[in-house]
Image 1 (tube, rainbow, N blue to C red):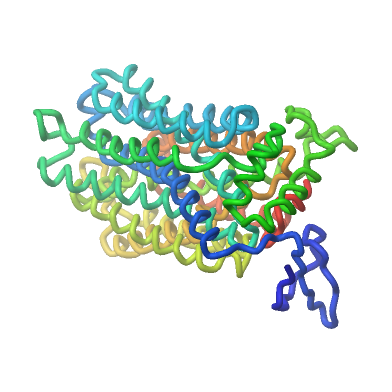
Image 2 (cartoon, rainbow, N blue to C red):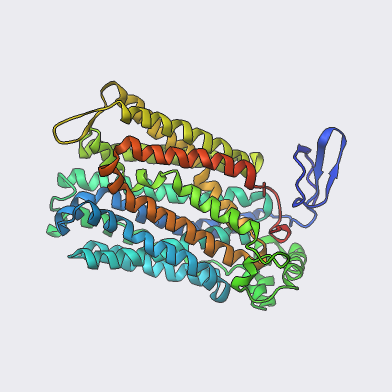
Amino acid sequence: MIFNKLAVFQSNRTYAQAMRLPKGVIILQHSNEPAVSADNKVFILFISLVATIGGFLFGFDSGVINGTVDGLQQAFNSASVGTGFNVASMLLGCAVGAFFAGRLADISGRKTILLISAVFFIVSAWGSGVAEGSFEFVIYRILGGLAVGAASVITPAYICEVAPARYRGMLTTLQQIAIIFGLFMAFVSNYLLAEYAGASTAALWLDFAAWRWMFWMELFPAFLFLLMLCFIPESPRFLVLKGSNDAAAAVLTRLYGSDAASRKLAEIQQSLSADHQPRLTDLLSSQTGKVRKIVWVGIGLASFQQLVGINVVFYYGAVLWQAVGFSESDALLINVISGGLSIAACVITLLIIDKVGRKPLLKWGSIGMAVTLGLMVLCFANAGQDENGNLLLGDWGQVALISANAYVFFFNLSWGPVMWVMLGEMFPNQIRGLGLAVSGLAQWSCNFLITMTFPLLLAGIGLAGTYGLYTLGAALSILFVIRMVHETKGTELEDMQG
């Protein structure tokens, strides 16, 4: 199929059949992209939405902790270090889950890993609410982390492997919208439960504290995820990898129609014909013996997404705003507003990512975050302090609030969704699972580092110093994008080079 529109691009060898025209204009031909009927599109959208329920649970499980910090401190008598570990413990499971999920997905299949993660979401949601001590709570949170880590890397990979190239960015961005919607619903749920009970630590139904019910609310979408996964097919690329060509052809027929299925099957077979069962040494270049550049790019993308400090807002948003003088109720409401802005930003990205491309969104997102984080540092540095050690922002309060929400908006316009899109699509077929495993491990390890150290940094160098470090991370991410990241818009997965 030939694209009928002309576009200006810098030289990029990963694009198929590019023909130079005068004045740097290029016409792109993607003859290997299958035509998609209306019925096929509906089916692709359906299975993509089912897969993104995992993203919703990822967001809900990450955000629910935000409103439970006071309850955890009171129930478990934990100080700042203990509270930091209770909050961050899930991220240990995320790192392990992300690393092994990518590898196990190459052995057992993408759908199988998503089914296992759904079961873990259910167990974690129930157990976190019934836990009577920190150790028991941490065990259940780590189980939830395994599920989140697995869903975080397998969901975008699955969508990339079933979606046509022209819709891949948009459909994979649904993952980030689902994550943010999950966060948003966790914030709304936390706010409503705390308001109804009077406080997160107050007793609610059946005489259980409200913060316990905050965790149990996750059971509803978790059971829905487990049920709906029964209605989606396995990834055709995984089926070809395992030699199940007939099953792959059947799935491709449902995705693209019978006419395009045989051609697409042949392309996938050809791309895998010289390959073997994935192994860790595939991450090394056969020419130099060093780690492939594409792997370092994946690690960099995954790490910088966390080094800008976004999950401090997600996990400690209520604590942050209470520290600068807002009540618990107002702090939880600010989280709801931030969640709404995040969803709006992701919707914008969904509409433009396949037109604008991945790299421009990352670059301008980094610039926006660096500026808004810098403004927050300025606000915190000029704040006074009351007798309890809380900051008094005074006239800087409005600037800090606007800057914080603008920072969240820029993140969800760029690094939030685009990082997951790129990780799901940029690795060659042979190393996709391995590349996701290593990148996922880096992402969640940095997430754990940022989350675990925030209470310590807050006590040691204050909000201004802490956010100064995140500002530095955002500034460095600008250079990383400019020098290391290459555009993947419109490229078929079989044409990815690395």
